[in-house]
Amino acid sequence: MAISMAKRANATRILRRTARAGALVTAVALVASACGGGGQSSGQGGSNETFTYALTGLPTSLDPADYQGDPSRNIGFELSSALFRWDTEGLPEQGCGTLANVGQLTGELAESYERGADGKSVTVKLREMKSAAGNPLTANDVKWTFDRLIALKVSTPGTLMQDIADYAADPIKVVDDRTFQIVLDEPSAMDLAILTWSQFRVLDSTEAKKNVTADDPWAKKYLAANAATFGPWTQTPAEFVAGDRLTLSPNPNYTGERGDVRKLIFLAVPDAASRAQLVSTGNANYATALQYEQYAQLKTNTGVEVQTCASADRIPLVLNAKDPNLAKPEVRRAISMALDRKTIVDAVYRGFNKPSLYGVSQAYGVDPGPEGAYEFNVDEAKALLARAGVGPLAITLHISPARPGSEAEQIAILVKSQLAAIGVEVNIQTVASATEINTIFKDASYQAMLYLEPPAVADPYYSVFLYNSSASKLNTFGYKNPELDAIATELGTTEPGPERDELHKQAAEQLVSNPGFIYLIDRDFVHAVRKGFTNYQHAPNGEMFVHTLKKG
Image (cartoon, rainbow, N blue to C red; front, side, top):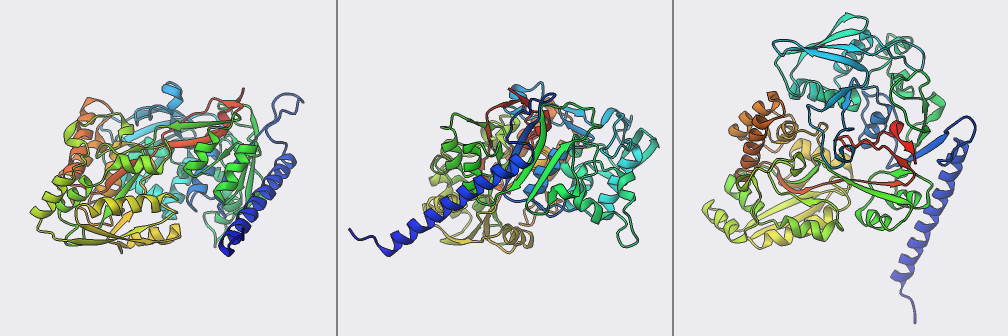
C-alpha cells in the first residue's frame, strides 16, 4: 500500500525527533561523566554523588536581580542563602501532603528573631556562617543585599516588600555585626514568609564590592557569573555557561544540613520529550515541566518515582472587567457556573491535578462551605445572563502553551464547548511566547485569557491579594470588590488560626458570588525523580532542595 506524502513527512519528523533525543542522552551522559559521574559513589573517602537537573532552559545570569523566569527560580532556590526557610520536617510527607503556612518557618542564615511590641519591627540574629570565599556573614551583607534590590527596582522583591508585607522604604537597620532589624510601616503576618523567596538570597557583599565600578555600582557584571552566597553551593565562572549549563559544588564553609550530593549539574534541555527521556534512562535525576502524558508514562518506569504534592498554583479564566458586559458580576458568575471543572480535569490531565472547588485554593486546607464553593449549573447560568440583560455574547479567549502550559488548547476547546451551552461564543486566539502572553495580560489588551497563578508565597492572603485586590499592580483586568479588599487587608495582618480561617472562608465566598479570577484547576506539584535519593523537603513553592538529599 502506498504511503501518503503526509504520512512520510510525519514519519520523518518522528525519526528526527527520536534521533535528537538519543543524541541528547549521549551528550548528557558525557557531561555527567566529565563532572564526576551520573549519581555514582566514588568509593574514595565517602559519597561523591552527582545529581543532574534538566531544565527548560538556563538563565544568562546568576544575579538575583536579573530574574528570567522559572530557570532563575529553580537555580535560585538551590543556591539558597535565605534568611528563613519553610519548616517542612514535621509536616506529612515533609510538606508534600500539606502546605506549610506562614507560621511554619525556621531560620536558615537567621539564628533567632524577636518581634517588637508594636509589631513594626523584627530583630534578627544571624548564625555564624561563611561564604565559599571565606568571608563571615554579617548584618552588613543583609543590608547591602536589600539596598541593592531596592536600588535596582527588582520587581518581585519590591512587590513582596511593599505590597505584601508592608516593609519600610529603608527596611534593614544594622544593630551590630550579627544583628539587624527589619522595619515595617505596619504589622504583617507575611513579614518573614516573603524572605523565603529566592531573590532575597543574601549575597557576600565583601566579595561583590571588590568588583564595583563607577559604571557598575552594584557589581552586576560580577554577580552575573558568580553566585557569591552563604548557602550550601559554590561555583566558578567557568562552571556557568550562560543559557546552557551550571555545575555547583559544596561550599566548604557551609555548616547547615547537608545530604550526600556533592555535584549538582543544571542542564538546559528545551524539549519536554527529551527531558522525560533523560529521566527515564537515568541520565538525569530530575526534569522540570514535563507534559502530563510523560508523567503518566514515567509512573510505569520502575526506576522513577513520580511525586504528586500539594500546591497553591491555579489556572484561572480571566475576564476583562473593562468590557461592559464582562464587568457585570452576574455575567461573570454565569460563566463560572457554566464551566464543568471536573470534566475539564478528567479530559486533560491523565489523573493529575484537581478541579477548583472553592474561590480560594483547596490546598490551604480550609473548607469554606457551600457559599464559598463553585457550582456547576447551566440552567442557573442562563438565568443569570437573562437577568443581566445580556443576549448572545461573543468573546475572544487568548491562550498560550507557555502559560499556563501545553494543555492550554485542550482546556480552551472544552471551555468553548461548555460556554456555547449558555449562548456564549468563544473565539480562541493562540499566542506562542511567554513574553507575548504576559505583555497582553500586563497591557490588559484582551477580553478573556487562560492564565496561571503561581504564588511566590503560598498563603491565602497572598493568593487573594495577588490578582484580585484592587490595590494590586497585577490586577490588570479591572476587577473591583471593596468587600474582598477589606477581607484581604485583614488576612494580611492575622496570624494562622481560627480567625484567619474565617477570613479565608469569607474571601472564598466573595470570589464565588462576585468572581475576579474564575478558577478552573488547582494544580499539583508533580515531580518525576530517579529513585535512589530520600529526604526531599517539599516547600510550598514546589522547589527541590538537592543539598538535603540522602542516598538510599
